[in-house]
Amino acid sequence: MITVFRKIRAKLLKQNKFTNYLLYAAGEILLVIFGILIALNINNRNEAAKELQKVDNILLQVAGNLEREIGEATDFLDFGLRKDSLIGIILNKKLTRDDIIADDGGYSDVAMALNGVNTIFANRNYYDVLNQNKNGVPAEYADMMNTLDILYNQIHQRLLKVEGGFIEESKRIIQYRSDTYAWYHNRTFDEASLDFYLRDFRFKNQAEDFRLNGLGDGGVLAHTMFYRIVASVAYLKIYKALDKELEQKDFVLDTAFTKNFLGEYRLEHPIYDRLEVNMRNGSYPMMKFRLMEKGGDYVPISRGELHTLSKAEYYSESGVFRHFRFLPDSTGKPIRIRLKQAEKEYIAVKIEREEGLNGSKK
Image (cartoon, rainbow, N blue to C red; front, top):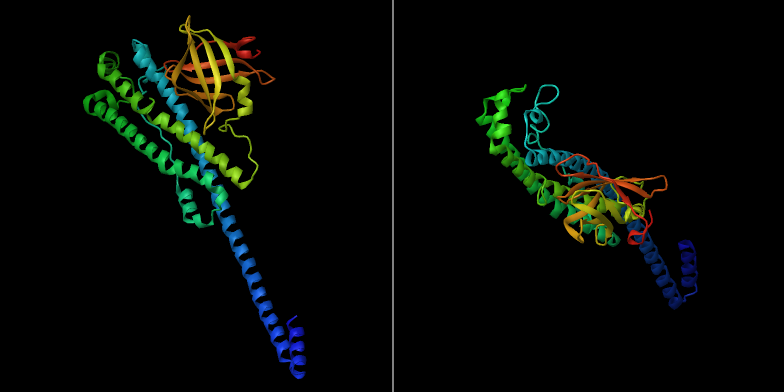
């Protein structure tokens, strides 16, 4: 096209039509400018596409990291539930020699309940890399980015603080025994230790402190649970932002599936005789429950919310029941729910949904 303009220019000059020549010269300049603008636009779009691809790749790494952390949080919850059951035995039972000695002749899990801690390691490296590339994050990712900011800058920081206190408390317990009792470092059972486990008030006090700092509402278990919830939400938002298909994960609360479990249940229990399960509406989807005392009405249970551990297993922050397991039949409808109480393993409780309760059918 430029060659054509040059031929026309030569012809016009030859014919001495200067005005027409100026018009064609201006057109030639505009054509060059237009070509440059098109090239710049294409280049900018290519660079933006590269930046977006870079951000998306970082987000996939963040998602992978979140999945690992959610798995660690689930392991910690299992650890916490086990510890909680053991401490419940210490606080609620008059311990005997058989409670302290294991079958192999060593110390039992009850005796070792306050030994050792477990925490999750929240790695924010990929999140920091994402922030370094924040200029390439498109506006439509804003909600997802806000969730990640809350997770790593607020919830993670609180979790670290509580974990630190939990670890220090555990160290103090171990240090006290190490400094006070000669039998503490024996690998085999020592009869002298029975006086501490069965009669020393410090053992129960240490168990109470361990539960308070580690397993109570303000302890590391509750903070880990909340971290796990928001991490799961962030994980889902990443896949939604990237418009990628997400495989069903155990830690993702399937609201369609959980609707099968909503309703009222008869409960065979010395204190409670009814259980109500419903869905809480809010930023983070979770199930909520209430218990009815025998001869009374439904009473709200402090922090009585169910958080998914797997597709049919839930953890509650309530001090009454800590672990729910829904047992569906082949149609997916619930036929039974098993509960794990704070001071016991799974208790022999049969719960079945009744015909007509709360407008639902068995």
